[in-house]
Each structure stands twice: as C-alpha cells, then as structure tokens.
Length: 329
Length: 293
Image 1 (tube, helix red, strand yellow):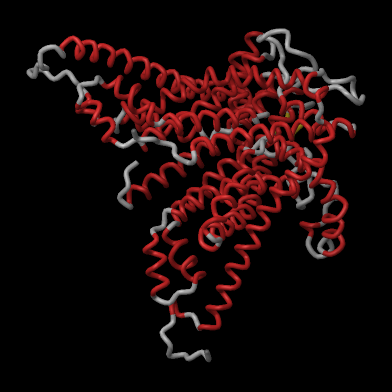
Image 2: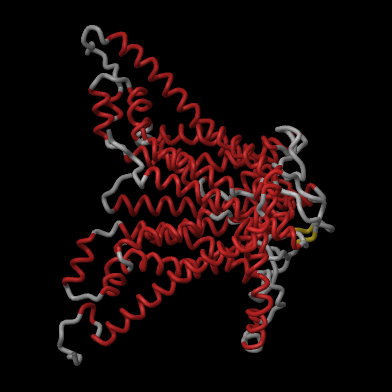
C-alpha cells in the first residue's frame, strides 16, 4: 500500500489535466510527511531526554554509592547514608502479592464472564468490572487509608495476631492497619480490572470451533476451559499478566497512601515500608540535601529500568507469539 | 450412572472427578466474579454514602475553608483540573495522534518504525512519577517555581504514548480498500490519510482521546513534583496550581473528619465525571470504533 502511495513514478506521466493536482499532491505529501515525522522525532527526543535527565539526576548518588545502592539497607538523610534494598524488596513483595491475588481472581472472573454467564449478562458484567479501571489511584488510596486500613487494624490483624502470630513469625507484627498487607490488597484491587479486561479479550479470541470440538468429544464445560480454552489463549493471558505486573511495579499514589512508610526490610505482613515509587512520592518535596535528592532519583532510575524491562519483555513476547501464529501486527 | 472404568473418558478423568472438577471450577470462578463485583460495589457505595453529603453548590464554587473548619469548597481544584487537562491535551493529543498516524499510515516496517513502535509500547508502562521527575528538572528547577505549565507538560508526556497506541490500533482497523479507493481516484496520500482514513476512524480516535484525558485527569504522582497544589486560585499559568486529586490526597491524609468527608465528595465527583464520560462515549459509538462509508 505504501509503495503504491508514492504517486510520482518517473516515466509514467499522468493523464492531461491531472498533472497540477499530482504535483501539488506530491509537494503536500512531502509537507505532510515532514510534519508527522517532526512530531515523531520530537516524541523520541522527549523519551531520550527522560532517560538522560534520570541518569544525570542520579549520577551523584551513583558515584557515591555505586551499584551496591541496590543491595544495601539503610536510609539516613542526616548522615547521608542511603541504600535502596528495602524499597526494591518492598516493590517486588507488594507487586508479587498483588499479582497473585489479582491474577487468580481476575482470570477466574474472566473465565466466568466469557464462558459461563448467559450472553446478555457478559457485556454488562464485564463493563461493571472494567469500571474499576476508571477509578483514579488516589481514590483507591483514599479507600485504603480510610476504610480498609481501619478494618484491618480493628478486626483482621488482631485475629491474625491471635490465631497465626504465635505459629508464624510473618503474622506477628504491629497492627497499625496501614502497611504491606493494606498496600498489597489495594494494589490487587487496582490490577483486577486490567487482568479481567485483557484476559477476557484473549479468551474471546478463542475460536468457537475449539469449544465445539472439545464439547463434541464429551468434555464438560470446565474441561473445555481448563484443557482447551486456557491453553489456546495462554499467550494473551500471559501478556495481560505481564502488563499488569508492569503497572504494579510502577503504581505510586495508592501504595504511597497505604503502605505507611518505613526504611527497614519487611519482616511481617503488617510492617510499614516503602516501594521505589512511593518513597519518591512521599519524600521528594521534603529533601534536605542534593545527595538525598540524587538518591531518590537513583530509586526512580531503578524503577524506570525495572518497568521498562518488564514492558520490553512483554512487548517482545507478545509480538513473537503473535508472529508464530501467523498474525503480523 | 455408575462409573465404569472402561468408559472412554475425556483427558483420563473418572466421571466422578469430572463432575467434582466442573463444580469446583465454576464455583470458584463465580466466587471470583462476585468478589470483583463486590469490590466495585463497596468502593462506589462508600464514596456515595460518605461523599454525597459534602457535595452542594458551595462545594463547587467556594475556596477551601480555614484548616479543619466546616464549609468551603474545592473550586480552585476544579479550575486547576480544567487548566491542567487542557494544557496536557494540547501537548499530548496532537503529538500522540501524529505518532499513531506515522506508525499506521506512513512507516511500514522500516527499522526506524520498529524502534518508534517499541519506544511507544515501552513508555506506555513508564511510571507516571518518572514524567514528574523529568519535568521537575527541565521546567520547575529552571523557572524556580511549581506551575500549571509544568503539571500540564508532565501529564501530556504521560498521554503521548497512550494516544499514539490507540490511534495506531484504530487506524489499522480501517480497511485497506478505503485507502486503495482513494488512491485509485488519484488522491495524494496526505488527502487519503486526512480525508478518508481519519474520518473513517473518527469515533475510535475520539474515544482514545477521551480515555487518555480521563487517565491523566486521575493522575496524582507527577503533579506532586510539578503543580504542587494551592489553597487558592492560581495567580497564573506559571504559579502553583491545585488539582482535584491533589486535594483528595491532602484531605485524605489530614486528621479532620470534615476533610475526610470532603475527600469522599471530591472523589465521588471525579469518579462520576470520568465514568459518565466513558458511558456516554460507549453509548454514542455503540462499540463501533471504525465506520466504513
């Protein structure tokens, strides 16, 4: 199509009367192409500038603390000793916990919506759940801070302490309400609509003949789901989970509002702490020295690399799998 | 009904296990759906129950009251939200749409196009706070002030890859026959793109634009580093500006019950606004993102 669009081909002159229009067309084509290409270049320039600014801002801290920053604990703005290990661990723990909860519930919900509900209910139910995606993260934070945290503090955490705390050290923490548990639950709630929407799309792409074939062989409805539909849609489902993971790693406000804040490695599910994104949001406007600021930017750079890696991985994976099945996008 | 081991069984399961797994599978799927719906209902009902009392005319048109006092409103935040959304759209929509048009209509499969597509797809997942840090260094620090322009730029940067991706996706849905028809009539390529392809995909592009705007209207993290927040109306575009999510953040973290009530009220306004917008869009386009004519 694009080759055909190049109107000017030497040796073939257009019919009389169309020459001015064609000439004008090619000139405007060049103008149009130029304008669009300029926009593309400026967007790419902004993207590169983001990378450069992040590295530049983190440079002082990178020189001071080196790569060891990532595996060192301790965050002391007074003595200017910084190590991001608690935040890296916090980011991974909260994201992984939220992914397990949201992945399981979201995938089951998508299966229920596409395979089980009567057709007239599928659209509305899916739309209602996807409404969760329209709720801004600060509202999730508000809900977590004012509703979920008090609930955890007054009922769930005392119950955990009483029945589980004696046996498992991981449940033997201070019942403050806010903390890792609260942040993980809120984050799971935020990821839920993403997982449902994207894996539902993947499930809808499974051809009807696959279902009919398995049913004709005598499978029950659940066997169709488990042995036929999920394996067929696994690439799309995996893609949705990886995209949700990228979102989970980078989520800032809802986590910043519900994780409490703390500079130690987590020991129990009730501890307070920080993730890479939330420590920046909560501390950026209170920095007292250039080194402190640079250490925060270094945290941002780690987060940036982490999410970019996940997203590139998801993109390459989805593309390769799509290509393997004969679809070129 | 008695299970006979010699029966042909799908996937090697005994009939009893088959029924059990069927029941268990769909039981847990139904339970998961109920949990998902329950989460939505509980959040919305909390917002409505606690927030509806805060919303009245004064809430919409007055400035915030003195700290912890009853009364007052969030008018500066609403104005700031409008300013920031406008500024971010000015940055994000044209740039994003141009990149989308480039990727779908002009680029083909050149290496440069691949790099661009990869960049767009990875920067979609960039945590928005990174955009905030970027703008802090390139605009807030040099001008020495937090400002609406800085906030708008940060939100615009968040918007660009979202807009680019939806535009590309929608344009790819336009059938090639439309382009071929235009070219066969002797129309130059810019004319085919602007006069045929874009109008055919108009509904989808508008939807993508509104979704991108809705997405950034709820962003808070980059604004902490750029727009900062303000108790009063902003004195200009290069002054600190409030935004509705910054207001919700401040009130949610404050110690006063009246602040919490107003935070619920503001959150209710925000959610209803965004949801209504999306619902209207959905009804007006009826799911058709591309119209061939």
